[in-house]
Amino acid sequence: MPTTVTASNGNTYHLWQLPDLTTPEPEDSIEFTTLDNDLSDGYRSTALFGSNTGVRKWTLKFPTLASLDVLSTTVTDPNGAAVSREQYVRSLYAENKVTGTPFAYQDPASGQYYLVDFEDQSLSLARMRVKIYSTGLTLKQRRLTGVTIFDVSQVSQVWGRWIGDTSFSSNNWNDTISTLALDRSTTDVVDVAAAQNGHQIKRFSNTTNDGRVSRSGSQLDTNEAFIVMKMREASFSNAAGIITGTGGADPQLLIGSSGTTKFADPSLTGYEYRLNGVEYAASNQQAPMNTWGLVHIRYATGWELSNGLQFGKNRNTAGTFAEMDLGEVILCQGLTPMSVAREITESLMVSWGITA
Image (cartoon, rainbow, N blue to C red):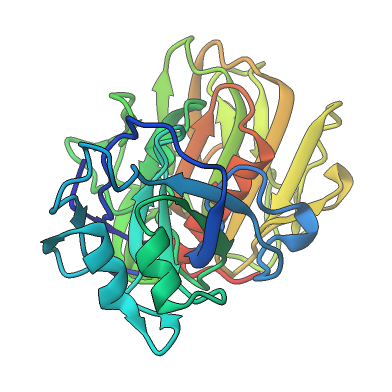
């Protein structure tokens, strides 16, 4: 396990490293810690998305004082030093309030990282010294605004992820999850440095049908997509292809509705559309025109991409190029749980500086 992790705002957090539990523990616990961030399944309902209201609790258990696995140096403190558990808590304790630099805790079940910050919950120094080895710590979770260390690579449904910071190599836009690189036939799709929130992006041509990237293959079926993008026009000048198959009869995951500021209604049962975390009806898919946004589409039945995948053109139809910028694309085979989808949404919006 790494000793530090880096959040999406660039801050580095030390990991609090605990040994595996080997002895039974009492059921009582002391509530004196607060977990900063909403990185856990089921924490947020749709109504609480983006809010710092509401708490969720779970317990970390420590071995008892008499246990043989209570070592004198079992915890890595926020400064990277190896100290005892009691020394660690006492070093953060002052005037009946536990404070200190947030650290990261990795959930052994999900593999995701959580930011932890101490905050006193009616805990006395004497009680802390007596109880620290004989009880668990109940963590209370709250959101740390603008920070997430959610790891998309831990999401099993993700089969493809393309990031604008990954420059074209031999005319390929390389996938950071697998080896499924997207090919560009010409240089009508280019890298643009520091174009959004300090990130490099891909800019698609607005004048030719060659402004696209694609990949052939039959194992590309998709149920869900997250697209960080911007249309560089006030309204769609054509039925622009954002994501489609490559064949003439292939699926259209996302295309523009010419003359409007909306994507076309796909008329699919079970189809969901969100922009910047806000859900819209399929007949009212507001598109990010002349501004950066996060587009999220979900379709339970899924799109069967039997011939291939492409961004920037509507299948093989002439005159359907997309005048757009792309920052990042994530494609999923199967639907993610909505709690995970919200975490991906927040992670991308923080990373790319997108506001609702």
